[in-house]
Amino acid sequence: MASQDVAKYLKESHDRIFENNREWAAEQKAKDPEFFTKLSAGQEPDYLWIGCSDSRIPAEQITGLGAGEVFIHRNIANLVCNTDLNVMSVVNYAVRHLKVKHIIVCGHYGCGGVKAALTPQDMGLLNPWLRNIRDVYRLHENELDAIADESKRYDRLVELNVVEQCRNIIKTAAVQQSYATNGFPIVHGWVFGFQDGLLKDLKVDHEKMLRDIQKIYNLTQG
Ligand SMILES: [Zn+2]
Image 1: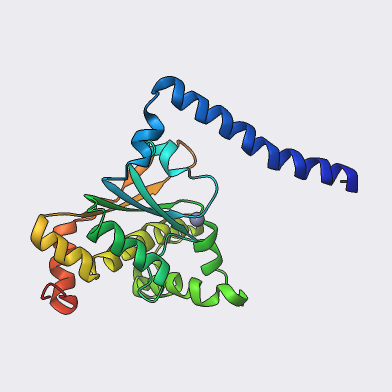
Image 2: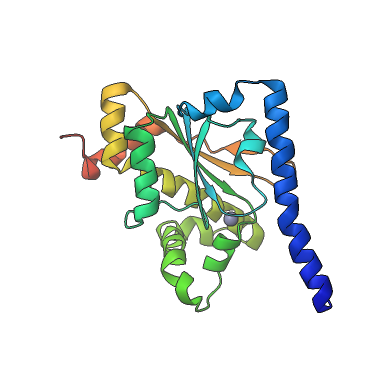
């Protein structure tokens, strides 16, 4: 691209956001004149969504949820690491203050983060992040190594990674204590597929997972 074309592209790709935004704001107001007044009053979302940063999975659009309905955290490969202050703050705030009813970990087939973790290569700064996925592989090494087809093995690691992150959420004091007191939140593991745009429910058994976890990670005593 010639340098004047680059400059033109940069200006247009920036400006279109503001055009879209003006249109969106006008649309919302036309549908409901009180929309922004209600929005500014506060949020009470039922869902916490922890998804991958991948640009192809717009959480609100694929779930049909609107503004104010879902609290969102996204990172590479939808990981819930207990030393990540960012995701831990999100979980804590969503459970203790917003009192979300469902926590969804949503991975996706074809995840670049999971693929990178399967690549035996130094990824620099990403090494400690991808380590978490490599650890999931190690936990399920026998099952994964028994899958001959490489792309099926990769899909399965995407699923196992989601389940492991659900487990990490259940290990938190916020979730264990809220569940003991209120009966929620319930943790769910889903995977999004690009072929058909559908969400697959991995049917994580929240209750059983919690019981198993609490043998070692019981944090329900205040
Ligand atoms: Zn991804």
